Image (spheres, rainbow, N blue to C red):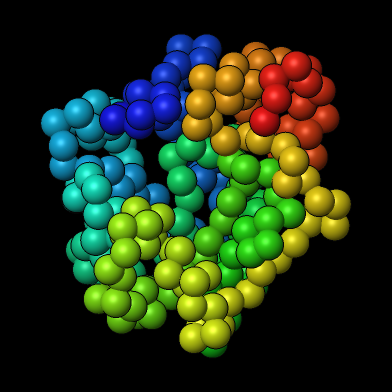
Length: 220
């Protein structure tokens, strides 16, 4: 809720529904995940996120505001997870099929399966599937602030030490922005959602790109 570029963005409503609910509904359409956990901070400013989770009926874990990697570490300990999928809260209209694809590619030797290394999917469609044991081992080595804030950056900065698999889109769509980070992003996603004529979970990435020209004046 304390995002500097767009405060309270995750609970901003479009059609009377908060963006976080759009995301959770899409995660519920994944066939590959067992549980959804909203990992937010223990700061008072994030009490509304915890209240949303209580009302919606989704698990909520609260940890450090600034040290996001530690927050993830504590989630892994609390829920005894073997593998987790990291999806950022700024991705309200992520395609569930991308998540299922990432999980399908994850095997017994994988440390990280990703679609952002290099990026060929739009912002807001980022998927990272992470082995918990590896993450817990390297957490102690995360000393830089950007590693603690961005959770998986340590992997990419030391890629020779891990088995990382990247999956790419046939067409490079990295110029598109479907994330909500700034006010102009919110306007873009709002236009896309308001143009939908079916339930929002029925729109996959190809559908979203078809709707994107409606926002062409909103530069990414």
